[in-house]
Structure formats: structure tokens, C-alpha cells
Length: 277
Image (cartoon, rainbow, N blue to C red; front, side, top):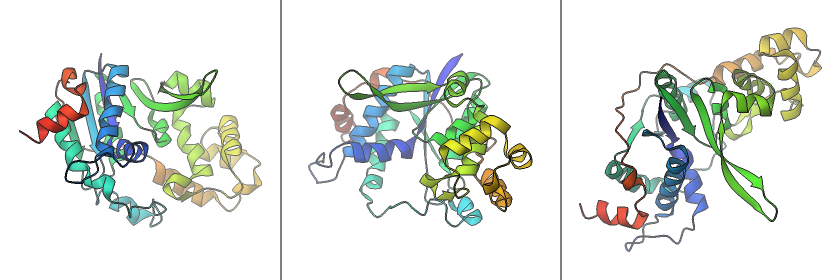
């Protein structure tokens, strides 16, 4: 089987922007810290996974609208007043075009659903590795669909970040329930990062215990004696429906064979090339 690395583009962008000093600038004064960080993450994960192909998925301004129509509070806790990271997207896209990596933007759907739909389609013939820090993707882990994360690991003298691939077996070992039930877990506790409220009084430990004991939401509601669920059944069901990722979107893309020698060129060389084409 071939390996496909699917990159959560805006997740990379955000981490790169806040992870690299803002002093990194072009002669005209434009910040390029996100550009440097993005390419660093790309090289690191290509080196680790050794994929045959790479696909980057970016969000768009309108892609989230369909979800906002269902829940006006969705992601409204995020501060987008600093536009500097988004101003670096054109340079990042030029670099991807030079390297030969396909990127996808869908004006009608959120990037997360595009990623999942591509992973689902490609998993028939490929091992699909989704590179993101967003744990919501745990819900779609199955045979040939994995989540690649950077996680803090304590060594003898310090903490470091190591890459961890969550296969189905790895997820079950850590969480002690099936990946598909991660959606039930989120439905109970909510998802603060996306501004989705859960049942008051049910946090990570209690939600995990309920899922381990009873499985999915309907069985939890029917079989558990958790008094906090009383009166919240409809909210929990709506959470599950809302947080469930789309798997069958018709996504238009064409994978290109990865030119690894270009991936591992220095960021400065790539900058010089794309600005003097």
C-alpha cells in the first residue's frame, strides 16, 4: 500500500505562526514566520512518515458557514483579529506549488470534513495519515486511517515533542474504547476549543467512564444512572449530530508524486526560487 499524508493546513499555519518568532521577515517587512514554521512541520512529517503523496487542505472564509447555520456559537470563541498569519498563506501556497504538493480549498465545506472525506476515499488503496493536533479526528480512526500528532514526552532532563501515530490499536490502548466512540465522549463533555458546550458537571474523566461502561450515547442515556444526563438528552444528541465529521463529500483533487528533494530544500532557497521564477 502507498502512504498518503493529509495535512490540516490551517492547523499547521496557526502552530507555525505562534511557534516561530515574528522577527522573521522579508526585506519589504512582511512576516514569514508562519512560512518557515509550516515548511519545518512539512519536512519533519514527510521525513517521519515517508509518504508517496502529500495533500494539504486549507479552510476558507465561507466553508464554515453551513455549520454556523446549525450552531451560531461554533468557533466564535476564536480571535482572528491578528491577520498576519493569513497574509502569509499566498507565500505558503506558492511554495507548495513549487514543491509539487496539491492543496485543496472548498468554499462550501469546512476543511475538517474535506480531510475526512479524502482520507475515507483514499483508505481503500492507501494508508491515510492525517497530520493535525485536532483530537476531533480521533473519531474517524480505523483500518488504514490514522492520526499523526506531536505530543509532549518527558525525558530524563526535559520535555520534548515526539511524533505519535494513532492507529486503531494505539487509540484503544490509550482510551480503552473504540475510536468511533470518541464522538460520544465529545458529545457528553463538549468541545471547548470549538465553543461546543457539554453537560454541566461532566468532564473528561466522567465522560470517559460513561463511554467505557456503556458505549454510545443512546446506550448511555438508556442504561446509566448518571443524574446529570436528565433533561440534557436532546442537547447530547444534537452535539453528536453536529460534531460528527462528514465522510462522503465529493472533493476535487489530483495527487502528484512527491518530489522529496524539493521538500528538503531550505526555506530560504525555496523563497528565492518562488520570487525569481
